[in-house]
Image 1 (cartoon, rainbow, N blue to C red):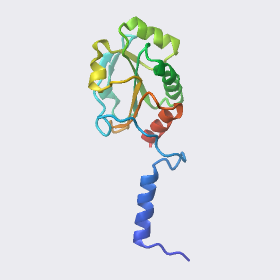
Image 2: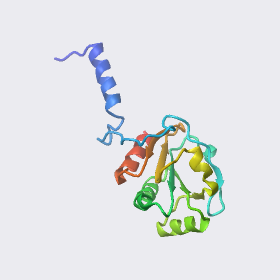
Image 3: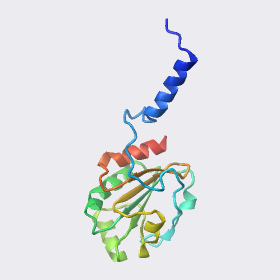
Image 4: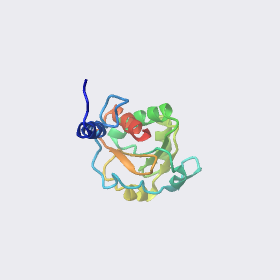
Amino acid sequence: MFVASRRDLLGLCLASLWCGCAAGSGRAPPASAPSPLLGKPLPTIKRRTLTGESLDSNALAGRVVVVKFFAEYCAPCKKTLPAAQAAHVARPEVTFIGVSEDEHSSTAEDMVRLFALSFPVIHDSGQVLSGRFRVSDLPATFVAGKDGIVRWVGGEHQDESALGDAIDQALR
């Protein structure tokens, strides 16, 4: 019969925490792109969407939030937008916000149609939000947990499953 000591139990608990809260998925959390926002509160977004609706991120407390920055001229964005749309459809309990960095709102509207985006999209006229989020390269995707803290940042080299894995981690 095996009798575990307190030290053994503490070691097992710490190992399970370190190895991942991904126990249910069998995967480790995806690597995040570097960002000064990791571990910090998601910056506030108070804007009108392309459809004219008012969006205030402060009203999203207690929800996992994904903020996806993109632009028409960004080739990697065209690869990651379909994954963001698929994740949005698969996870209705998560709030997705698209932020277009295009020069004209008409270009942003074209992107919404092209990729059949069903989440709200904001045209970031003057790149105010990209500055607030410290976005220097596109695409950039921020996943904040229910506590409003940025838990993961995806960049140009994220694979399609990384966003889904990051969201699953934030939902736990």
